[in-house]
Length: 175
Length: 135
Image 1 (spheres, chains in turn brown, yellow):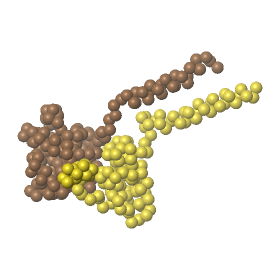
Image 2 (cartoon, helix red, strand yellow):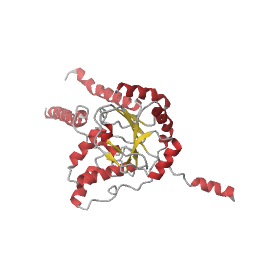
Image 3 (cartoon, helix red, strand yellow):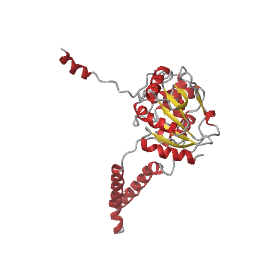
Image 4 (tube, helix red, strand yellow):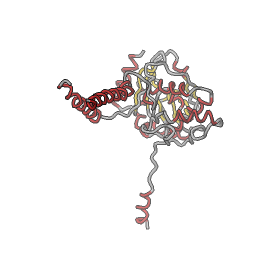
């Protein structure tokens, strides 16, 4: 047997050790990204949930203006933190549609009265079915939809004040 | 008296406001009437990852989203869809991460090939040692 072969198990060990150390040192990222980014919005139709505000269907995203699809809920605390940023985006002329996940009309009415209402339409997603169909795994999440109705980006978690310019720029670029 | 009550009140945990007020979906915790379909749905549920409590399958998880995913699986299976097609639907949305039965690809190749490789090395080592004994 060749002498150098003796080193092979040791090299194997070093390699494995390296992989394990790398894996342990790398920060864990538990966010689940949607695989739907870059694809057209799937077909769906959701009924209205708040009186006076239309429901939401995928047909509303037919060729037009790039816009935001906000996945939120009145029972979600980070959604409250996000509300001022959504209002700012609305003020900047962005059209925001929403999917309300597992919500009730009265809780949602209170939520909108307290935190502001930046939404053009709100769809009632009682069983999270639309949330699941666009690959969202929590609230709040915001999807950037381009003029052709394609998902161009997914923002996971609440939108912070310093995310707003970036979102505006991306929507402008998607025109 | 009030002071005595305070620690007691503190013992009552404030509810973590991370869940909705809606009851679980109809098919989240109810089996399908047809036992054969239910068995199919259940087998599939054990191989799908809960996206909220990521170490659990949706069959094991109490998270609301897992309940909604169980309802989705049962509805689709009841409609006559095959478990593999439901799995593909979810993988198209969440990537391979959502399934506990990872498909073969370049990334998962080491996972599937390593045992074969190890067996091969083992056989080769064993052959070497047996030869020496015969001398």
